[in-house]
Length: 229
Image 1 (cartoon, helix red, strand yellow):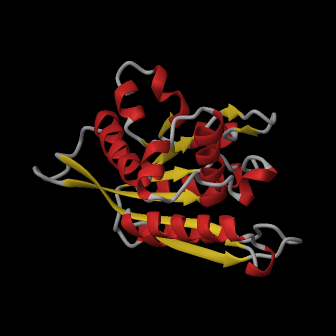
Image 2 (cartoon, rainbow, N blue to C red):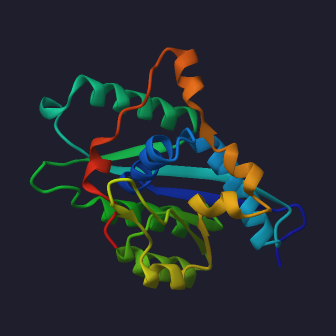
């Protein structure tokens, strides 16, 4: 029994390349705008409040972004500007960026382990009640089971789509089945309850023109397709 007036503490853990690929799809293919962190966190709070009503209020208290960072010598000026805007977006939304040095040959080795360790540390320290995993990678099944074992429920937040180039984003079925709750962000516009909320998740192209930033480029990581499952 939760004490009256208790707050549900939510932790959001981003598989960075998985999320960046979805951002590029929504912006370039569906022309919806740039998927933004702060309204997305507000959505998570609302969504969880409807799924788990054992708390009086719901708040994202921790968020982290896990991604490999490639050497700058091969990056274009456009990609460097994109990376700088991403870093600012993360800071403004209170998302802790956690990058790992990565080479073009090794790809993103170790980022899934870093995300799992981060989620376990935060969870076992008693800092969150519910974890949101923004990923589709089946390698996180043991993490979900470990969190559940310690009383932390898990939301699978994912994107299921095929882009204009035929590349797919999806979630591993084993991961989907072992999570306590699941939500396909890209399908919210077809949900009567969340259709209006879905539109609020995006910064529109005019927002970028008004700020003088110009159109976001396609992230380099997105060019290689969706996350591994």
